[in-house]
Length: 343
Image 1 (tube, one colour):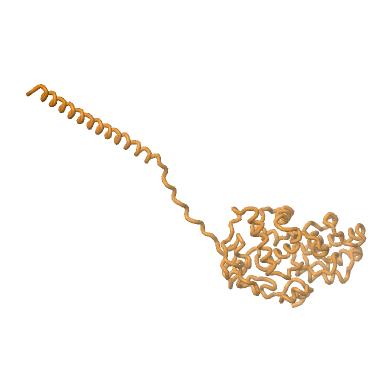
Image 2 (cartoon, rainbow, N blue to C red):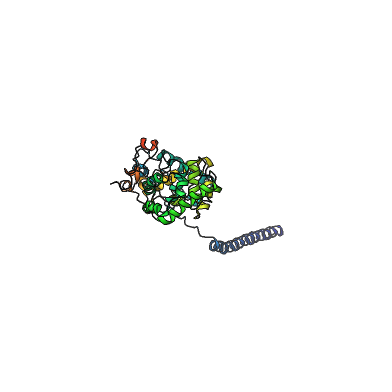
């Protein structure tokens, strides 16, 4: 072999060896990379959080359209899901509360104080007597009282035993006799026999609290006030307008949701609804015109036919509580209450 041929052969061998070495290095590097990647991939898989299962959607109580069908003359409300007051903003609460009041104003356009009276003195006395009894019972009792003692001066000078005998049907007649004679004396001695038209003066009278004062101010003097009686307390808590239990705090909380000019009529609407449909023990949910707006829908009877049987007073076809109700109530189909001792 010539020297030049030998050189070419050696060069070729070296080139082949170099290629093999490079290929081997690449293969080894690739294997090392793969080996390194596998554990990393497994580790990341172990550390990766498991996907949380989505919670099933909560069931929402829906008031059906037929819930309003049992109230005669009331157009069915639109079907909406009952709102969730826990997540309700202040603005949403105000809107819902005012809408409820508007709906009730359509159901009870003739709402009025359900105590018979002809002047502020009679309303004041009747309101004091209405504690722990019905307005109907008071209305059946006061005609005899006012016939015998028409003025504060007359009642202030009355024989307590004779007054007790008249007031006996109202219950707690001894305590009530003491209150009405006491407030009559105060009116005679401090206010010239006239009922004052200011809250600060009314609450100083014996047996007169804020509730009684606001009844008198709103209905005898036309000055707005919220009457927080047992019906009002029950309903505003069911509607979750407030969680307060103290009457004064309920008054403040609810008053903040409405213009002051609405307070008196609001009181009538809520109290009338509590007496006729939204009862304490068994509310007639299936006959309630504001069922779609009520968070407590379903606490009472939801079947429309069964709920209809729970309605009271004119909604259930029965007489109202006043012997001499306003003409608007009579025009709407309301029936006066019977006098004491009748039927």
